[in-house]
Image (cartoon, rainbow, N blue to C red; front, side, top):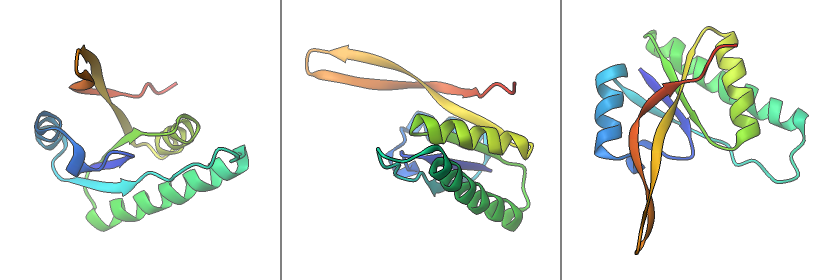
Length: 119
């Protein structure tokens, strides 16, 4: 199972991204990524991160399946989430994309997933 903790719900993913995630991880479950106010301090980031991790751990215990966590969002919350998930022995991944510039604008092309390093 893949828990998608990001600002990009499954409904916004490309066909390629859904296909690769499903093939590698099976079921995909969205867990909303919190909106982080600009005046948020470190203590609040940690509180938000712990709340999200608690939600994810409850989902993991319900499903009782191997799991990876797709974490993509505001950088300081991202960092706190990855640290907490890894402390709980969970694999965290990020989407890998390439920005393509066109005359009509730019867009991103999904290239795969990359594991967050465990330090």
